View (cartoon, rainbow, N blue to C red):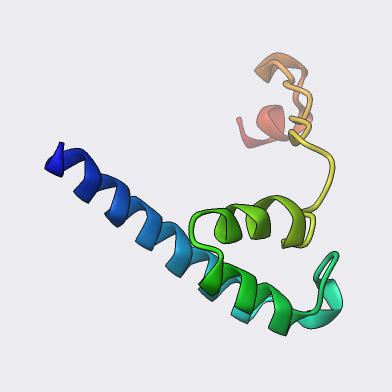
Length: 86
């Protein structure tokens, strides 16, 4: 049991440090819901839930679009650049 508790403490500490650094480096203009100082207080004093709340509700949204579209694959005999190099 001690081993599981130690793993939980390490993971929680790592998550808290990640959330603190991410919040501190995020420009205040891009933050959602609350100002920066309140997010920092929540992350520090609401153990466990604060960092998760930051990741879910406070972080700025990433670029939308999902997957990048791949370029159309052209066979070598139809590719003029390939044929020019021959």
